[in-house]
Amino acid sequence: MLARLPAIREQYRDTLGSAEFFAGIEQEIEVHRNHPGEYGYQFFLLRAPA
Image (cartoon, helix red, strand yellow):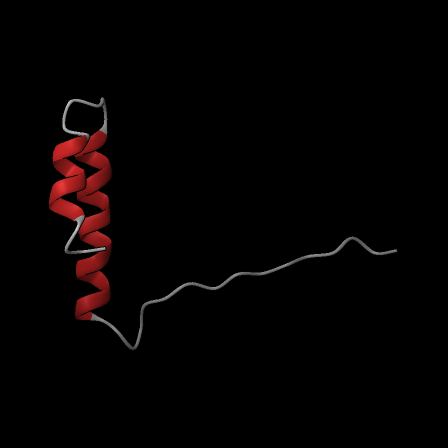
């Protein structure tokens, strides 16, 4: 994904909010690069009681 980011950013350069969106993606990649053992995702699935 990182290799494709410049081309995708260029493709959507005229889309409102795209600069902020891609800046957020790049920031997330940088955080993961700097803290690989401490950064990740968790998903919690909840089920209503029967």
